[in-house]
Amino acid sequence: MRSASRSLGLALALSAGTAACHEVPAPAVVDAPAPSAEATAVEPAAPSAEAAPSSRPFGLRWATQSRPYPRAVAIDEHRLAVVSHRQLAVYDAATGKPLGARDVCLAAPGGLHLGETGLDVVCEREVTHYALPSLDYQSQAPLLAEDQPGRAEQVAVSRHRAAVAFSGGRLVVYDLPEWREAKVLAVDEPVSALALSPAAAPGDNWSLAVGLDGGDVILASATGSLQRHTIKRALPVEALAFASDGARLLSAAGPRVSVSSLEPWAEQRTYVGVGGVTAAAWLADGAISSLGRDGLLLLQGDGEIRSLGGGVAGAAFGSLLASNGRSVAVVEPDGRLSHYGAGAASRVIPVPTPGGPGDDTTTARVLHQDDDHLVVEPHTAGETPDLGTPVYVYRYHEAKVGPVTSGRWIDTTEGVVKKLTTTTVEIEVGPLRNVQGFESPLAKGTVVKLVWQRPDADAFFSTEEDGALARN
Image (cartoon, rainbow, N blue to C red; front, side, top):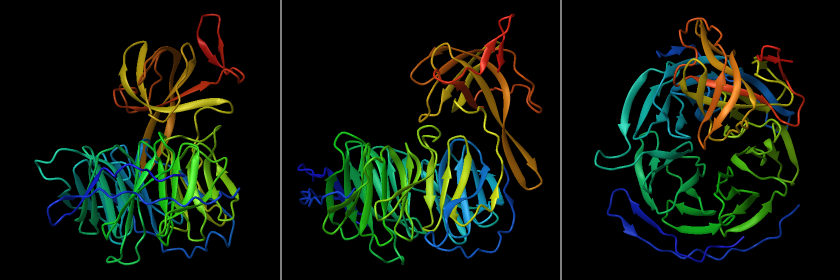
């Protein structure tokens, strides 16, 4: 690993004063050898005394179905919150019991702060405050002045601070819970990842890691120091995570996943064979949970790597991860929400997943539908079927039973892929099946799931004599 020789290209200013530009050469890197609608609320259950991850087996505690297309997830000792497809949902972290849900703005990626008595959702240009446990609307505050262009594109949150990267290069660190500007940065390159160091008290010093599309990480601190280091040249830094002591940083860019000390910057460990990591978080016992190409992993301090599920054959690219230091929450693009921690499973709601062994799936939004054609926009991180591939189309549907909202996928139609573009899939479909309560079950904006068979797997379609498709 090398330190970049060029200047930082980053301006730093106190929010209370006039911006002053600094160009600070990055320090040399010491390389170390790498070891091998309306709110519906229910009172939360009493907090559970959960043992540290190392004291009991770490695995799936509970799982449920939330709304697809998640934007942010957050977890503390008592609650787990998810913002998906303009809905905020809160669950009891110990049991998975739904505590409430309400409609909200289109949140910025990562734009969710879970406090002791309130919850903040970062929208494109403002932050909205809700009360806990009621989820009642409290207030809204602008993050940008009216004459300032831009919108929030990346958010990182710690207990006492938040960092927001806006389009146009503006990056702001805020003190919580007031969302008061603490520092303003200007970055002249696309920001691909953010991380804030933990702080035990509001006044503690902090560090901010800014991942760039070109493979570098910029480190900024409350004291005004700036450093720049290269993780993997020409590949975007997709995941950053500080250890609980704030003295170490995990960085992931393409095939490289490494842990480095900050003072001085020195690589301590690389995880060989682990790549494509898109999210990571440290646990209290020093292990690291990572999410990406290889599914959900535990990266142990001694170099051991343990899989908790997923992988190339089953991982959902584009999933989100959050941790409270003792347990981990994962939400997939199709809305499947899973909570991992110490101890045996406490509550797993069976959520039928369209398809079976050998099937590929991707979540998508409907752009257009007429009598025999359907055009969808797949999730940006999902795969797509090839031309001529037979597919089944499932519609996401929610039903309310008292205070509980349940989601499921309904088999709606089937067809064959007729046209592909860089962003859309056009399918020639047969008649739509009736979905109770919907005159048009595949109206524009509807969330669907496409299911198809990989070429190397046994076919799950056959052609009838009349030319219709039938599932084997």
